[in-house]
Length: 92
Image (cartoon, rainbow, N blue to C red; front, side):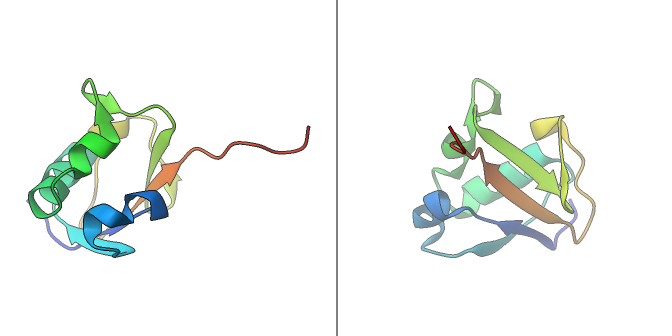
């Protein structure tokens, strides 16, 4: 399993990482990265995954590209993975 994946953690999930904004993980897919994060930061999986899919309102970007495959998306070595919560609001 490749290492050196950099994961950017949104503010709402930082209590799981002890306040860390950026963490390292390993994995060739987003699902493997999430599993590796769960081993280091218990609760990470459940905050991202529901019924085998990314929770509604979350998007994953790998190297700045949104991944429509979600958990199945490939993650190259030394990639940056961003967990992006949906944004709401706007002009009414």
